[in-house]
Amino acid sequence: MCGIVGYVGPRRVVPVLLEGLRRLEYRGYDSAGLVYQHNGELVRHRAKGKLVNLEGVVDEHIGVASGTGLGHTRWATHGAPTENNAHPHTDCKGEIVVVHNGIIENYNALKNELIAKGHTFVSETDTEVLAHLIEDCLDGDLVAAVRTALSRVDGSYAIGVLWAREPELLVAARNQSPLVMGVGEDACYIASDIPALLPYTREVIFLDDQEMAVLRRGEYSILQIEDGVPLTKEVTTIDWNASMAEKAGYRHFMLKEIFEQPQAILNTVSGRIVPDTGVVDLPEIGLDPATINTIDRIALVACGTSWHAALVAKYWIEKYAGIPVEVDIASEFRYRKLLVNERVLTVAISQSGETADTLAGIRRAAELGSKVITVCNVVGSTMTREADGVIYTHAGPEIGVASTKAFTCQLAALFLLTLYLGQVRGVIDPVTQKKLGNALIDVANLIESDLPRMQKDVQELVERYYAAKDFLFVGRGLNFPIALEGALKLKEISYIHAEGYAAGELKHGPIALIDQEMPIVALVPKDTVYQKTISNVEEIKARQGRLVLIGTEGDEHLASLTEDVVYLPHVREDLMPILYTIPSQLLAYEIANRRGCDVDQPRNLAKSVTVE
Ligand code: F6R
Image 1 (cartoon, rainbow, N blue to C red):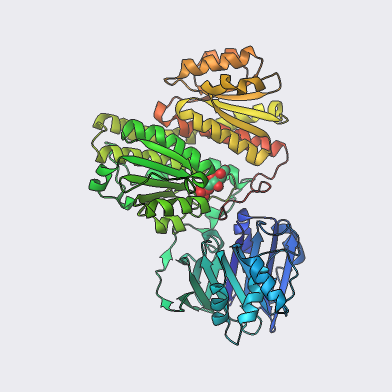
Image 2 (tube, rainbow, N blue to C red):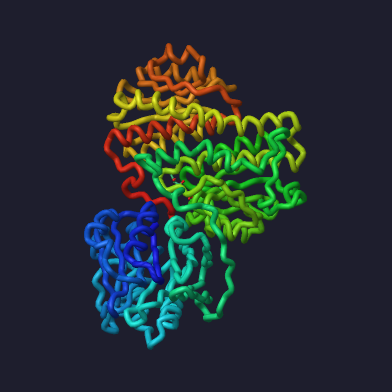
């Protein structure tokens, strides 16, 4: 939610800011703005809507030879998405500017206090209060003023601050919103996320809560906000490169990311499993075998698509590791009475590692004595630093707002976790383990070879279905969460109302929705519940529902039920969720495209949900 970027160095500043914002736009696109130092003044440009509107009002080639500047892309929380509410915000004199990601919870009280002192506010945002508060505290030392101002603030923030009178100084600070610093030759950067830095540097420092950075050309210092004590922080080298966060000839990031899935899954699995035996090694998990053997329950905590991955993992872990699993939506987990203790392992699943509710959930679990691990895609993100252990999904940067490759990589990582837990606890026999390990690698290879054909099959359906108003997705067992995921993908990028149901649950209510208009996507692989699912499909057909079936190659019966069948190769039942996800991703993508929707930046959404 909101992306911030900042630069101090010898490059022309405006192109650096715009390039950074392009790579952060997935975080919000209600408005965009930037500011840079020029001849002792701060020059600010802002525009409502997407970044392209800002690009229309800023001369990218403006001749500022070197520079200091800040940029922002907004996901509105306080105040409508207007140009006036767009960041950067300034103090009364226009000498201090602030960009901010987060929420200042006590902004109203602070605003009233500052108005009483004579400050004039021009926006409806919580952020503007920061600019005036810093102005109020400023007595010749910007760093001290920012520290004093922040000591008055409740809430979450990642901020960048400039002062017209110090052209080569950028002050940044973080509390509960992500902020990473880039260290380049003779230059320093800040950004909400790593992709903004990749064209310039792969050397980064992750700021922690209550830390601030003082950046000048080619030098920086990091301090604690509270007492100003200097800190020494580790520089991490990121193994992503700039082109990984580009479209590489695809029309959309989402399509590129769908097609990257086979390689991303292999990257996630590679080096962690011995192909001949299925033996799994997860040294980064941070749990010794003795601890693993004392676990008597696992709590899986996540939001959205990541929660769907957790639902699949419950089936796997209970079956192959023999540990009872509870799955929670993080925003519910964090506020309910938790029966969690040191014998419960909490596993957070998150692409970004920054989702506010999931983060709060693991903090509560840790307070209650639970060990916490996170399955995460972003190196150095907050969850990875707070958890006792991490299983990274090596999906590479995911830019499309709708999660695709991160989801299938989460499934792969959770399958590895399942095998590992079963192996350490001695409850999985070596023959099964070998078969499961091989099946995981096979599924990635099968997706690779079948993806173009799947896309073609799905494209043939689009004309018949793109205008539907509602959709149902149904599946049983391991494919029930995949039905939920299919419905989520469709609604978020095509704006068609869609619901996912366990196929057996239809007759308890949703079957009343079925008529000649209602498309139902049913996942009917040849699995152990095949006959049961087919019976549910027959019930839909008897009520003239419009069926799209996704099932196993060679199953002629499906073609007798509807002309709209997408066939998938046979895979071991346990791994079906990974394969059966792909056609629904493609269906959502193709329908959204046909309806003229903005696939990569659907309305009202942002990729990294750092507010609760
Ligand atoms: C949907 C989607 C979201 C995220 C959710 C959690 O396509 O991407 O539902 O899955 O916001 O985000 P992470 O995984 O970053 O915690």
